[in-house]
Amino acid sequence: MKVLFVFEFGLLHYRLPILERIAADASVEKLDIMHTLDHSNKEYGFTELKVKTKTFWKFKLIPEVNNLLDKYDVIVFSFNLWRPSWFYALGKPRKAKYILWGQGFGRGKNYLVAQLVRIYFAKWADALIFYTPTECARFTKHGIPREKMFVAQNTLHISNAAPTTDSAKTDLLYVGRIQKRKGLDDLLRAFAMVKNEIPDAVTIRVVGDAINPEDKTELQHLTAELGLEQRVTFEPGVFDDEALKEKFANSIAYVSPNHVGLGVVHSFAYGVPVITNKTRKHAPEFEYCNDENSVLYEGELKELAASIKLLCNNPTLQKQLGQAAYQYYDNNLRVHNMVNGFLDSFHYALNEKSVSV
Image 1 (cartoon, rainbow, N blue to C red):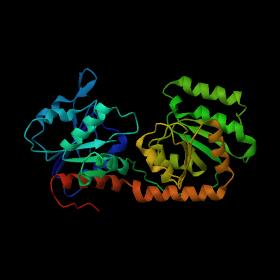
Image 2: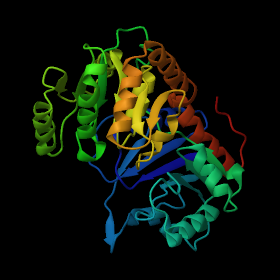
Image 3: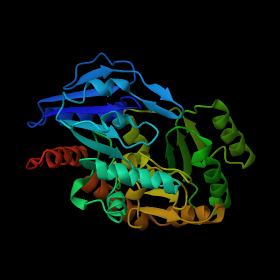
Image 4: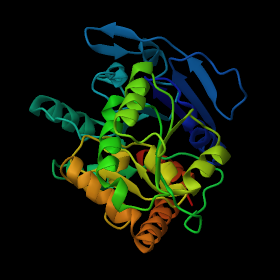
């Protein structure tokens, strides 16, 4: 089969291993990736097609799609109402099968009009791919057949995934971009509330760079105000798998109070539980967290402090949650699971028998 992906947001680096595996599948004759970033000028199993978007009010579309509709068997579009390049396929005879891929309704506000539009196009598509099973269940309630919906849980290729539950655990770790929305100031304040009630060896380790340098400076000033200079470290961001594993190896938990995303995948890949507020607006990867592999709290600083105290003082619980975190990764977040979600949707749309393994 000939397949085209339309990436309205560009080709993200962590997608490359997934796309390479799709391209290598025996059933895929040709894989093209249409995206809006500069070409990487590297050799892949797929072909990059550089395009530009056009803006119509708040909508961004890729007009080049209109010229390619008849050249592929399957075309995958982002299920994003603000970048609906599948509009070019409306009202035209279908040669290709059209698949919409994305968060579905998502965790944000679902206004009635937007909800109805999503349902309409979910019915129009030949197949749907969502990040989580929850979205399949939500769309089923609106009359979308379950058999046309597939799950490709958002993940990363982590070359050295392995549990680190037997390492000495001393850190409350944050890895990622330093942003106010993550709630790292809450982490510092909550830690200060219980610092004398947890082992002296426990420290906060913040690994990452700030888009806005003031965000990091404010956290450093807050660290000094709270008298935590000896128990908080700030380190530059790292992206290499070996360096990341070293950071996670000594971690009691990955802590991001107000927002988690793909950091959950890294944390679970190394057998480290997550501490986060379950009432906040998170990325879809939050759904990977549950009471068996993470500490999920409601409330504000008092409840976060209690969660920190609970986990730091209970090595047995640390190990139990860490083992469950790694098991979730091993069962659900290996790259082949995401690849198979795509391939199964392709075969379904083409009315072919799936050959994924």
